[in-house]
Image (cartoon, rainbow, N blue to C red; front, side, top):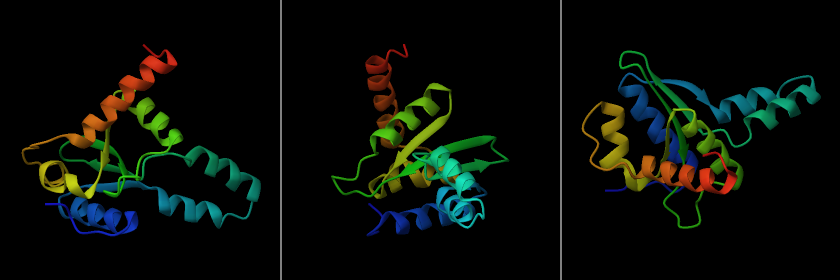
Length: 145
């Protein structure tokens, strides 16, 4: 059953709370990084840093005991909620580098998100499949392979 969330921010809090409850560390949360950058006194440096963060996945989760790292882009279940062109490229590049990259939506909670966070059996990997299909398309279109 999908998690009832109205916004991506609510979805992010749900995932973060679930991750923390099961031993994951939030290595990077883009909202926090952007906030710190915007408060920087050197605005030119802030602009450069923001450009580097543009399109980076919403969360980088690390589970030290399991030795796992996840790069997670969060989207709502709304039909129009798709990764931007820049996000698609970044996700595909991370995937090409051998990283575990996911696009998670509330509808993935029972079959993929909760089992991944708890270390249980993942019944469906739609979020991982979305990234691998995205990578395959980018690979063909941009000549990476």
